[in-house]
Length: 234
Image 1 (cartoon, rainbow, N blue to C red):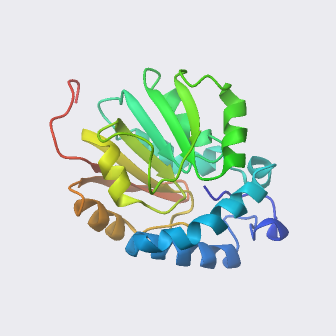
Image 2 (tube, rainbow, N blue to C red):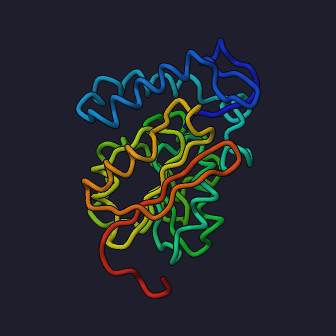
């Protein structure tokens, strides 16, 4: 859920301009992302520092980084166009202040959408956007993407923008025929970026198949699909 926008090196190393985040935060993010993608057992060592970082950064996050802007959301928006039939239940991992989950809700107006994030402060801000009704069409929950509080086969769509992939949990909560999206706002310049080849290999080990990879604005996206019969309308 790393964003981009005004210079803010003192607030996490963000930089303005078309290149996205500055080199320091990009290097740290890429190293952490590679560890999680290739060695998920390292995540417990990284979880507390990650939570602390985003808790500290939450207030003013969208204004400083441009999170929620058309440019920031472009690869996720492009990936959603590939998802057919429309999902009944969708989940966004690493939702941050909720802008991605709300985009999903706008794209699929009949879907029930859930957003989860490790940061309590980010979830607090996300809930401000829609209220606290847990039975609403859009709701946010404090949760770790490596151990989701949902049953197997709970969602038709699991999406994430600018965060490390958790292959096992994504595949576990995905319904047969459901889609998984991994998007990065600035492609390889995104701190939490995973190359399409690594994504496809990781998801194929969990039984998913590649649907499409592409670019939108400065970003990239990969769409995978779980095996099983599609719902009517596909």
